[in-house]
Amino acid sequence: MKSIEEAKEMLGSLKRARLGFYPTPLHKLEAVSEQWGVNLYVKREDFSGITLFGGNKIRKLEYLLGDAGAKGCDTVITYGATQSNHAMQTATAARKCGMKPILYLTAVVEPDKEDVRANLLLDRILGAEVHIIPLDGRTEAKAMEQAYAMAGEHMALLKSQGHKVYNIPEGGSSVMGVCGFISAFAELTEQARDMDIKPEYLFTATGTGGTMAGLTAGRALLGSPVKVVGIQVSKKDETYPDRIVTLGMEGLRLIGAGESYGPEDFEVSPDYYGAGYEIPYQEANDDIRYLAGKEGLFTDPVYSGKAFHGMMDMIRKGRIQKGSTVIFMHTGGATALFSERAIIGDLCE
Ligand SMILES: *Cc1c(COP(=O)(O)O)cnc(C)c1O
Image (cartoon, rainbow, N blue to C red; front, side, top):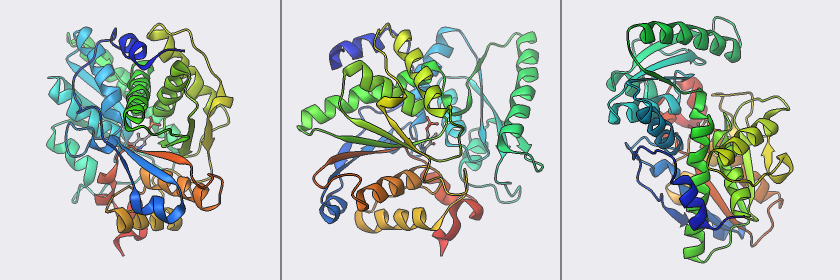
C-alpha cells in the first residue's frame, strides 16, 4: 500500500506528453444530492482538454504518446467506431505532438457522407487519414478484426517507407493507457482528501476497460476503500472482469508496484447498456434530460448518460444507501449529442 505521494513518484518514472489540464475539477451536484439524500460529486474528465471535446482518453494518451515520442514515432494508428471519442481525441493528441493520425473506424452506425457529423467531422478538420470499414451485416467484432488486419498491412508499408508507427489499440486500453487512470485515481484521492470528503463509491462508464483497469489498480495501489463500479456500455463476455484485472496488474507492474487485486475487488454492471453499443434507450435518455434539467450538465447517449442512469437507478432503488458519498466520473463524450439520429434517439424530440 502506497501513499499518494509515493504513487505519484512511481508514475513519474514514465514518459508523459503534456496534453490535458490537470487536475480536472471535482465538485458537488447539489440539487441531485438534495433530491436523493446522497452526497454526489462529479469528477470532470470531460474537462480534460486539449480541446472543448476532451474526455477520458486524454489521460491515457499522455502516457501513450509520451511512449510514442520516446520511441521516435512520427505516425499514430488507432481504431474505433466512426463516432469514436477515442479516435478523435487521439487525432488531437497526435497533432499536438507533431505526429500524423491514421484512424481505422468501423461504421457501427453508417455515417452520411453528405452530412458528416460530430467526431467524424472533427477527424476531418484535424486532417486525420480516415479509413471506414462498413459492417456489411457482420458483428462489430468481425469488422474490427478486418480493421486490425488492414492496419497491419498499412503499418508494414509505412515501416518499409522509413516511418515509425505507434499502434494504439481500441480505447487506448494498453498498459500505457491504464497508467493514465492509475494517475487519475491518485489525483481524485488527493482532491477528496483536500476537500475533506470520504467517497464510498466511484462510478464510471466502462467500454474497452482501460479506465476501470486504471482506477481499480489505483485503488489497490493506495489501499483505498472506495467501491469502484463500472457501468458497461456494450455487451461483453464473462471474461471481462478478468481482463480488467490483467490490464490493471500490468499497469501496476510497469510502475514497479507489487500490489495485487482481483475481480472481487470491484463491480461491473451489465444491466444498463440496453440493446448494445451506440443504441440509445428511453430510461437512459430520460436521465440525460434529468441531469441537464437539474444541474445544467450534459452527458451523452453512448457512454456517460448510460453510466449516470445506471448509478441513478442504484441510488433510487436504495442499493446505494442514503447519506453515501458517491463520485460520478464524467468521462466526456458529449459530441455524440451532435451525431446521427440513430445514436441520439429521442433526445432531439
Ligand atoms: C472511451 C469512453 C469510455 C470508456 O472508457 P474505456 O477505458 O474504454 O472503458 C467512457 N466514456 C466515454 C465518453 C468514452 O469515450
